[in-house]
Length: 138
Image (cartoon, rainbow, N blue to C red):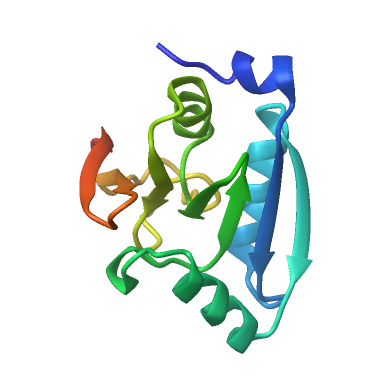
């Protein structure tokens, strides 16, 4: 099973596009840094963020508040660090992964012990989708 130790060994860079007003994005960035990733953050306009989302090849049902790239993959939304490590370890032929929306309990969306069930979705090169990982709610 992939772990965040992989992130600490190779220290891939995650480039994040977000709007300056988004607080939960900062929580996700902090979680990625704690997992050992180097994170570059760029605050952009809503139009620029929207354009990056459209260019990703991800359908809008997968979009969240920030869009990132790492090692040629798109990472959309509040994806847990261990799934990024798994993506980088397995290197599937894919566009990337996404955590659609902003589920409570995902990295950066911490509210006490509350946790929504959520999936991490793998987006194939043809933009088809499959479940990459599932996280239970409480």
